[in-house]
Image (cartoon, rainbow, N blue to C red):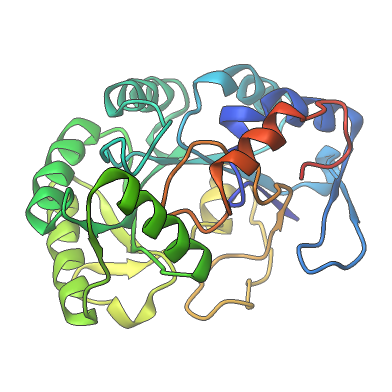
Length: 290
């Protein structure tokens, strides 16, 4: 069983103490977002094939990585660095700080442990195509050699996302756009070419219609990559509930509406105020997050 921590929230940035407590306790409870029963998940080493972490700020999580590595758990880390303006990413670390952390982690754990995420790609009056090309080029140059893969995707405009973007655009006096597919694919191909020039594979998360032309299918939950660190093959099965997802099966132990980073395009948070309240009221001894 592969454990994801978490595409619903940023466990490394905000909930590392809770995570370590659950590891030491040997289990965690996971809420059903559709209202079903709570699921109890074992976290003992024999039950866990590996961890996949997702973050925009791993700096507070260093002791947790040391602990799980010492306990023999394989892990990989998805690290999102976009360098977006504050109007879009209200409270994420500055790109310079995230880059420094990424490079330090790569030196410590190796380039195969870290996956750079430049997603979602959002087109706005502050971040047009030309901005993305220059910004991505600069980021890829400094991260070259520290990872072998960058994951790309265009913003999925869910209902929650649309509402958050509308409010942010009104408050920040900017506009945003959801381009036609041909324009999205063209930009993704240009980004992939830049990535290749800097020694990285460019993979695409959950958007199979844009594959090809230097874009491979992302396996964000990658059993093969985890197998390298486990020292044996991990056979986790395939996740199948989302079209175009090539991930291995996993259990996500996070909770929605708990991440206060303030990314206005986020599908996991209804409002930043709700997420801030959740963090303020968080009990690190609780068996469940969110």
